[in-house]
Length: 116
Image (cartoon, rainbow, N blue to C red; front, side):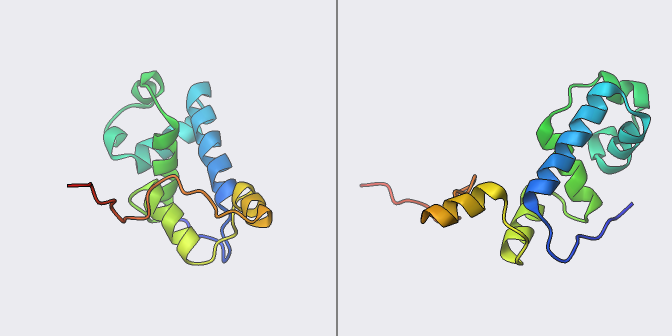
């Protein structure tokens, strides 16, 4: 099931949705286990019971959410939102209001030169 992002997706809300998937896995929620089975390549052929017994992380929950929106990874979803004018997270808003640059969890892609 592919979902469409809202016109101004909120990264903070998507993070909460990923945590909800993680909690649903921990609780053994049948709907959540089915979502995991449908969206995570590792568990496409696994039973609900096998998925429930498996170690499951927040990054895997984020990947499921990204896949539902048509992105291969959470970082691709996150970057799409940040590049295309999605609503900033609360943390990013606070940092901008304080006059500092928003922190990014990953480097910008530039590599530092090593002294030779």
